[in-house]
Amino acid sequence: MNNKNHVGIEKIKTGIEGFDILSKGGIPRNRTTLISGTPGSGKTIFSTEFLAKGILKSNQTGVFVTFEELPKNIKKNVRSFGWPIDKWEYNKKWAFIDGSPRNDKNVIYGGDFNLNGLIARIKAKIKEIRASRVVIDSLDTMMKRFPSEEVVRRDLLKLKRELEKLDVTTIITSERYEEFGNISRYDLEEFVSDNVLILRNVLNDETRRRTIEILKFRGTDHNKGQYSYTIRKDKGIVIISFIHDLKSSYYSSERSNSGIMELDHMLGGGFLSGSVILVSGSTGTGKTLIGISFIIGGLKESEKCLLISFEENYKSILNKTKYWNYGLDKYEDSGQLEILNIYPEIEGIEDHIVDIKEKIDTFKPNRIVIDSISALERICDVRSFRESLINLFIYIRTKNIIGLFTSTSPTFMGLTTITQRHISTITDTIILLRYIELYGEVKRGISVIKMRDSNHSKKIREFVITEKGLKIKEPFNNVSGVLKGDIIKGGK
Amino acid sequence: MKEYKFKLFITGNDYRSENTIRNLKRLCDIELKITYELKIIDLLENPQIAEEEKILATPLLIREFPEPRRRYIGDLSNIKASLLCTESIKNTHRE
Image (tube, rainbow over all chains, first blue to last red; front, side, top):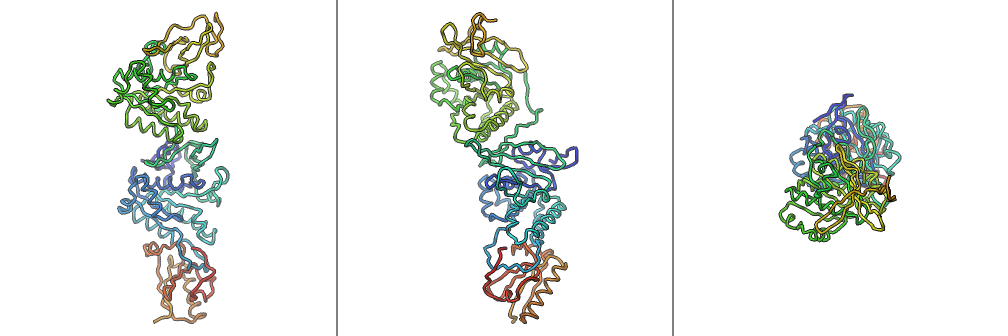
């Protein structure tokens, strides 16, 4: 459960999805970690989940000290994630220290005071329920409650030392008013905590992106930079960190058909299991049909297939296949095939990725097609797009399924788009579809431009869409400049 | 029957607790000349009382009688004696 690293700082797993990978094992044990963020950035959710996952995954009890929200409001939030807070409280797995403002006008300050009453309460509660985790929410409301900042600073340090003696791991939340700049309003981070996390909710190009960053973990290693995350009503925070344990990835030399015989030849025998394929082409070049052929190829081998369409509607997909005399509906009825039609705009890309992963977990497909990822690019910035897709690609590899993704290139003939530049390095195979103008006619060309760990044909072939599916014909010989879209007859 | 009834919450027998008791006695016996009942509770020995009373800052003096119930935070070194017995408090500070 606890990971020791080379400098001997032990960490405890938070249980928050993605965080323990990003932080290389969790947050430093028996220390205080400050979580800073703007209002609505997810600080309270992160800290309540820290306690909830402690109970659910590590059998560790927790104390929640609140200075702002009433315990009953916090409980309402916790319940909305499906966590049985009332049962936990009853069984002494979770306890509140209520420091929320009293509606009591009859208070007078007269002379020196300290926060020993609070410290005594926290210590007693930790001992009573044998807590391993403590949350203090928040530093700012605590500072505002008392007429002397100096006293609060002094006693916070005292509290921190007392907590360390009790072997508990603590999270303190702190508000900031700008996404970038001072870590917290009271500049307390230096002296309260050696460990600082920052949550952000940045508006960029009219899309919001939630990120988490580990600013520092003194004396212990962690990943740097901002990572996207999303908040899910059923599971809490999900961080899209793409650093996974590579050993768990599954590499195989097993081949699967592409659904098109000639394409299998071009690929040197078919797609590799656990590989990610990008099919790129401008509109109308036949990307969706390549995807459907791939699905049909799987269905014929009795494999389970999942088709997620972000662009074409369900009906038009079925119409296409009827035209080819494949009845996809009968496979859908038998449960071997599932087709999902999703509007990209309904949620952020991080949520789409989590949805797809959940679907993979429940449906357990052998093949998955996503048509197209360009539709997802519309709803986020470049970085979220790349991170989210890498995260999904790695997931597909670890599940040993084959994923085929289509991508629309804006030019009819040219080669790269931003999409492809950003994700081509992480795909195993790239198939290019292009319009080729030859002898006064527009033809379609197909080529395999990358195939990891395998030989493949480098030729560009003509392909046609017929009533029986896609047909790949002879290579374009005697011409060059096809990739550039600038055909020269006679070739090299 | 005493005129006043106080509860004083302290955390351990340190100099601050002693100061608070001394200040309270000075205010009541010398300045106000009132009769009162005083109950002293050490929260380090009874933390559950701190929980019930939702105490954060100490020392804390609570005037239980006469009504309204009133809370005084600090060692009472810097307080007007009259505030201990007054009914309405204007210059209050949030706890």
